[in-house]
Each structure stands twice: as C-alpha cells, then as structure tokens.
Length: 247
Image (cartoon, rainbow, N blue to C red; front, side):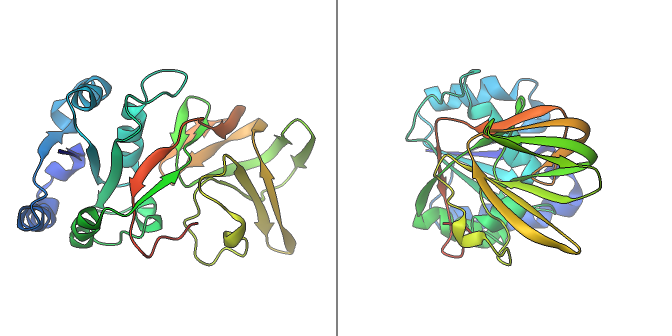
C-alpha cells in the first residue's frame, strides 16, 4: 500500500501539469495509493503515524526538501527517534525547486521517480539531527564566530567566515572526499574548506557547535546555535535510483 504525501505548495496552478503527469504515470504502472494533502491537515504527525499503523508500507513525499523533512519528522514516533515499523519504505517524487535530497537519491525528475518506485531498489541510510530537527544530506554553518567540539576530543575555533559542512548523506558528486562518506555508518562527516585553505575531512559521532550564527539544514531549515549534532540510532529504508550520489 502506498501513501503519497502532497505538500501544500503544490496547490498552486503552476504545479498542476507536473502533478497530472505523475498521477497518470503512477496509474499506468499500477502504483496507485492514498493521497494525503498537507494543506488540509493540522497535525501531520498523527495522520502519518495512523497510516503506518493501518498498514501503509510505502510513504512517498511529493514536493521538495522541506516536504521530505516534514514527512520523515512525522514518521519518528518519540523523542528516542523510534519508528513504528522498520519495514516501511520512504521515497520522494521531486516537484519544484530545492530538491537536492531527491537528486542525491538518484531521482532527478518526477516521471523518473515513478519508474524508480516500481523498481524498488532499497538502501538504508542514517538520519542526522541538529537539536530537535532532523536532516538527511547536510548542515552548513553560517557563522563568523563559533567553536566546534568534535567527539569531546578536540575542537575548532572559527574567527572568520569559513566553509563548514557537516555531511550525513553526500549530495555533491564533485566533493573530493565523497568516497569516504558512507550513508549508513552512524557517523557524521565534517568538511572544512574555503579560499586559500586546504580542505579538511573529519569523521565523528557527535558534534557540538557554540558561539553565534546558525545552521542551514538540507538547504531548507535554519537552526540557531549553540546546538548538538548527531545520528539517530535507527536507520530509514529509502527507495533510490541507480545514479544516487552516495555509498
């Protein structure tokens, strides 16, 4: 059984043609399912968890990075980050802009996403958190004055703007360290780079950031610092394409 979670921004007329293409393709492939429109729902979490309890096995976010964040956050049942069922699959049908998560899964276009759903190529990945928020791909630090503590062993002190990324699932095919990033190894990957500066790569379990500024999660959500970043214990099963950008 499939549940398609449509984000509320898809109500705009400019997206109607893309949605029509998706729905026709899903019907042709026999992938029909229940459509849940977020714009009409006050408590997204209750609705999604009820669907899982009722036997939904595939949850598909239809939208962008923000949609993915909303849906996966709603699949998490409690503060200990448990899931109702480990065999529930997750995927994305990307529509609109800001779809780096779907692209990292190897899903570039909406109709292609339907074919990938049918193929059901499944991979487990970690889910990262920053404070009370989750992210899949990366957190980028926006700060001129911050201290980064890495596994309580050592720290970096920033006194100028520096390119800092904390990567969970790689979304950059041009990243020099991409082959060192494993999407299911329970580790975060800190990448430091910038003009006139050698790139640095550090793998860690937990990172604390203090000082001033904020993090941007998956190019979507801003989180103020100080905050702690880590990996949720339980992994999520996702349907991916052949051309995904991670191991």
